[in-house]
Amino acid sequence: TGIQTRAEQGKQKRDEYLDRAREQILGKITDLQNQLETETKKMLTEKTEIDSAVFAAQQAHQRESHRLTTEVDRLAEIPQIFAIQRGGTGEAQ
Image (cartoon, rainbow, N blue to C red; front, side):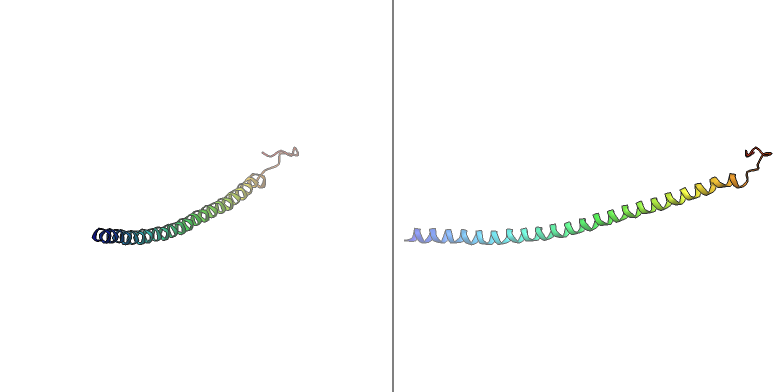
């Protein structure tokens, strides 16, 4: 009958619409997943760069701290080098 045919055609059109919508939505999901993967890799790279910068700064701090300690120790010896002994008391002037 005509009603049955039109009903089947209407259902078929809706199935086709749903198939197209599903395809578009799945395509967008794939695009978003790819974008998320790209952003995740980018952020991991940036975090690694931050960790490397922190490590380098810590190493530089340790080297400079050691250098300063060595210099302070060296400078502390200067008064001893130039100390003048008081007459037999062993005390520096």
